[in-house]
View 1 (cartoon, helix red, strand yellow):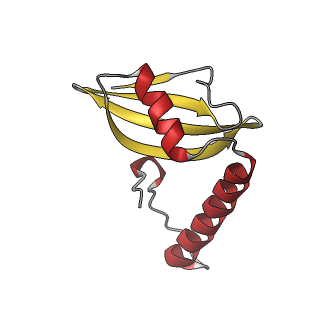
View 2: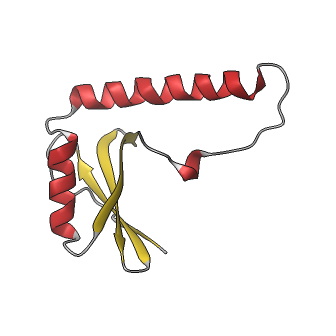
Length: 104
């Protein structure tokens, strides 16, 4: 199970309630992941291994699958000392995707 702190939010909307909204968001996220994984030519373990080769001193801490601008990617986050580095792997080709990101 993944805890994605970037997606945690607090809402004061009335109506559906926060639990209903969270379930709706979770269903949408699962549907997106299912669609992306259905088009993937590699599995998550292969993506993590490929990403690890790009950050050999990093410790894998989180991985996700998503669609960005009609590209299907696995995004793997590594802890390297005091920094977090993100590596994107193309789901269709198993190669690093353009636009690697670094976080502090």
